[in-house]
Image 1 (tube, rainbow, N blue to C red):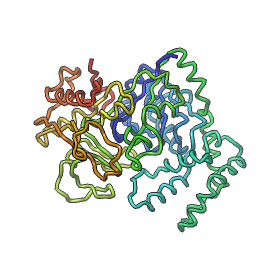
Image 2 (image 1 turned 60 degrees about the vertical axis):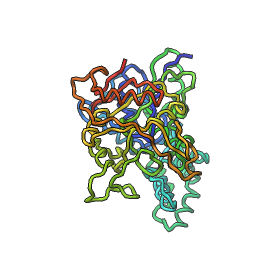
Image 3 (image 1 turned 90 degrees about the vertical axis):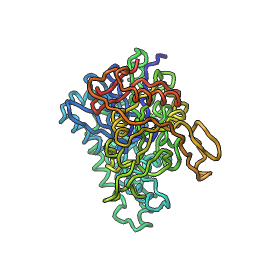
Image 4 (image 1 turned 180 degrees about the vertical axis):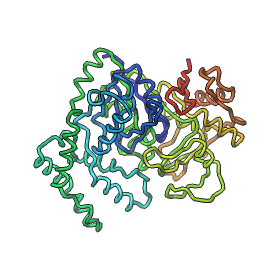
Length: 448
């Protein structure tokens, strides 16, 4: 079997800039795939000089002649997908009707899933801080084998209504028990609405396996654009502060419907500094003016985390929420190497980190943890049991650096920037192959 699949995965908690490197690697591929998650993910691509924010459609489809696939492991909100299709067409992306394929096995996000998401957050003592896009409840319906798939939207309306009735029977009891009568589902109404969505999506719906068979046989390139990231994986992350799917490499292959034997390369993506949206452990997090609900506290003096957020404009692409900010954690990268099988790294925002260093007078990199009386070089999985977050051990680079448009090779970068990369490579044990130096798609250096 030919090895033709490149998987782009996030190394921490998402928002690392995966869309940028996925778009770059898509230039030499025939297919670009979104394999996990739903509209809780967000990535931005630059097309004709304009930012195009996508949540479901793989960004690589903006390149001519590339075929985009939304795989069976995703969960799709039809209205969001139709809006993205309109956005791409309005932006001038051509031949979308011929170049986008949707697996009929992907599951559907309905409005009641969002209502359930809201309810689940309300009853928890420690809310996760989900995007409230209904992703978790949709995967829950999938796991209990009563969810609806894209194929179901193509059924006659009366058959679709029956399936909806079966799905929402227990949900409606839950809504009534919690005085949420306005959320009780009218199956007939939703069957009619989503049957219309189904007809609009019908030209894109297909069985993706025959496509893959020919692609692998011909050794054509395939790129999977990962959503979320390693530390948000339902099994490998800091449960319960995780997503509902499996954004690690193996989960991406499964969600795309591809065999492991076809894997060629895994590119891990991280920022030169680290960020997180929502609750959960963050060893290198810096003090900032964010309250326990994730909202900015007004009229506060700027703290270290606030300075990083402002210089990097760190607000969620999907939610707009301010991100928690901290220093690069190279130990967690090392853990991601073995958890995701990462071959090479892409480090984005190296230019921003230089500005942060110039503003603060220093840059720090976490090179080990102090945990339960020991110095360790991996992220432990028993922090919920010990009620202890690993304490970072830092190496410090004095000052910062400036990167301008003339710096197009790794050797041309400032010495302190190269020193930072060397520390990351040494601690993570992963070679850095790509360095992001600006916001545009081509603001990237490939290290030979």
